[in-house]
Image (cartoon, rainbow over all chains, first blue to last red; front, side):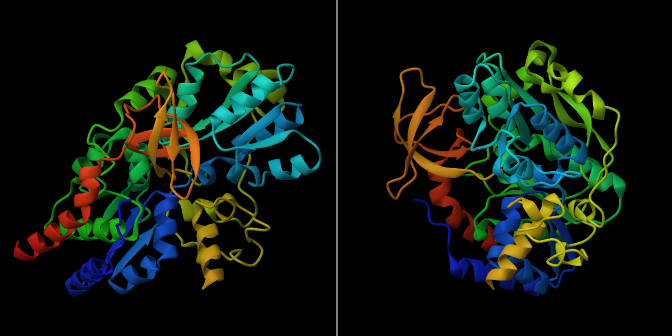
Length: 360
Length: 77
């Protein structure tokens, strides 16, 4: 339908950036951006132009904490039908993954979306069905929308939804790396619009560009960031205007706000990030698996879980190291035998790096 | 996971809750359209079974021209 593959324009952007002779570090927070960057060799191309671009905490499955993984594993072991997205199934916990439990005969089901999980609940009225609700603002409206439609009483969610802007703030507050700009995720922004990012530019003077997912989108997005840096500007610009509106999707925002409220939550590799998670409002607490199955989860409620031994996913997610710098990458940790979630998820930078390196 | 696929709306149910989306190459699938205001013929972006936004066809068609314009503008600036 819309053709956005224009090689001449792409070359023009690259040669223009090259002449500027810059040395910059940008971060994006989206697995699909990382996929486009690595698949088309843009990451290498940008490096040649003096621009290093890292992924940051932009992979919902990857930032899910070891504790949340143990919670869902325990619920499966307590006999619930556990449903979630395919990427989540393989993430290793301390001893098991949902995949290994499924092999042992526990009822673990992969879904394309939350509506599939509702379908399982309707089909299995005598059983408890738990949906592990993972995802950023792009995915949260689906969970909220379903909960507003009186789902079956045997259905509940293990809420793991998170929001992006507080994580950007956390990255800057931690001060572990000096960033010259953020490429903001196109589909998260489709929902939230551009306003929630503004404080990053006004308070931290960091340029931002919301970008789409075609190679030309990222080339243009980077060009726009470079222009802001060159002209000493820091503001939120929108490269993906064919989809992202300034106000976002208001209907979706309303649905989210009706069902969820902000809460402080930990992200893998991060300490607790203020108001970066979402919890169900009291009105919907009957669908909160943590409350409904409090007794089942009691044995781990006060237990802390750590990342797998040697796994550097936390450092990768904070943008401190690239996937290839992890000593386990491609050796002890591969997509077939992943140690950490960044190698499991198709949105994880380790998985993406491994997948395309293999194809080259 | 935030991947969203564009498709064209070919039909909408009476409650305006679900629509049949044509993704090209003879792939059609039902999607929930309750989060967007749509009509038949609109292009939407679909994520996890839900349409999350209507694509602005005019903006999309003008994207490359706009980029070209921005590049030459910066040159002049």
